[in-house]
Length: 128
Image (spheres, rainbow, N blue to C red):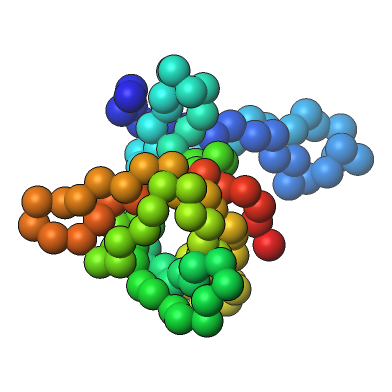
């Protein structure tokens, strides 16, 4: 995985086209983003609380989202999950103005951590 500082570039026209001036390109540095050449996506490192439920269960478990991409999420939790299991995740975005992100994941990989707990790799099936 390539660990450079990435930037997002977009066109901003605060004056409007009616002012007769061209829009300006705005570049925002995003140091927490990493590009994975093999998978051709940007992965955002996080350390954000989340809760999840197993499909068909009302029990709420907790964990932390360690990284997020447009296709998946890496979670750290004390709860053992099984490969192929589906979970409903609620990810706290860290700002009370925004509702938590809700997604359904399929567990792709489970790794037991030496100090305890589990590292879970999940594929995002849907968001909403």
